[in-house]
Every structure is written in C-alpha cells, then in structure tokens.
Amino acid sequence: MSKVLLKYIPEESMQLIQQWYGQLPFHLRISKARKTKFGDFRPAFQGKPNRVSVNGNLNQYHFLITLTHEIAHVACWEQHKGRVNPHGIEWKTIYSDMLKQLMAKVSFPNDIAIALRKHLNQPKASSCSDPELFKILKKYDQYSDTVFLDSLSEGEEFIFQERVFKRGNKRRTRIECSESKSGRTYLISGHAEVEKFTIS
Image (tube, rainbow, N blue to C red; front, side, top):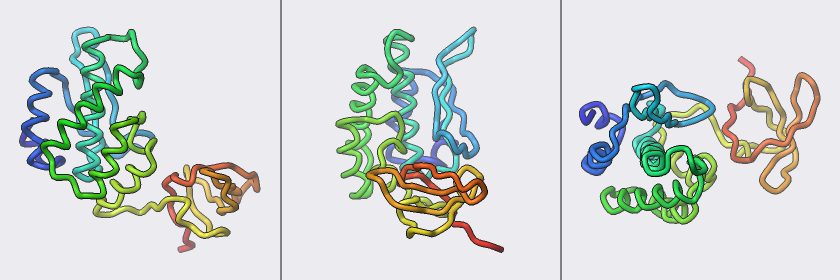
C-alpha cells in the first residue's frame, strides 16, 4: 500500500495514513477521473472488506484530503454501522479530528492550511461542497482544462455536462445560463467547473 500511495500523497502523511489503516482495515482503489465524485466509501458486505476509492487524477493535497474524508466514513461505519446519517454529526466529529491530526503532521501550503482550518469547523459532504477549499485545492492541479463558471464574463459561452451554454446574470451563488440549443435558461452554481467553448 505504501509504495503505491507515495505517488499520490505527501510523504510526511504516510505514517498517519498507515496508522489509520492498521486501526481500520479497508481496501483502497485508485479510480479513474470521475465527474460526479472524487472518492467514495462502501461498507463491508458479504465477506468483502470496507472499500474506499479515490480519483487518481487529484493533486497530492486534494487526494490526501479526499482519502481522509473516506477513511472517516470507515471509522464512522465501524462505530455506528448504518444507524447514523453518512454526513451527520458523528461523521463530522471523526473527520474533523482526523483533519486536525493530519494538519499536525503535514506542512500544507499556507492557503490550503487556512482553508482547512475553516473547513474542519464545519465539514461538508465533499471538498467541492466547500467552494473556498475546492478553489484553493484546484490551484495545485498541474493541468486542468476547466475553469469556474463565475470566472467567465457575461455572454461568454462554455460547455457544461456536454452541452453549450452562454453565461448570463448572477443571482447570489447561482448564475443564469441559457442553453444554446434549446434556448432554455438554467441556474448553475458559480462554483461549477466548466470548459471554455471554442470553435475549432
């Protein structure tokens, strides 16, 4: 496990991850990029162990935080089984404690450390549910062909969920966008990742 993981996480975090793994055995799978999620957890079932998956295209900090998020699900399941909400207070307490342990071991870049301190006080269902943390983590990607919708100018076209849209007016956290093909207007989160539309 350690040799494989060193390709994906900071070396200084390895000892803590191995400690958690020793306490909470699980099978880890490195997944291909998934648009709908960065990682997931599946509890032990019919002789199969607890299973955790994390997208292999994440930068080392995003991968580590996502892995910690999913290991917290393992810990919560082992303590409470299916009797509590997957992202309820029990999981939030475990996840926050794990993040504190992680921050004591890993020298995160200052901007990530600041965002993490805020994040651990009110953990979200995923890093992309916390726009501030997600945007900062995104900065450390080596390459990305996506941008955040709220970074586009009004009238600029973009691709979202394999459809072409034109950005309109902003309404608080969501933005009015018209689909080019149908002309229908949709409200899309300003934090959504989209591709700039170019005619080749």
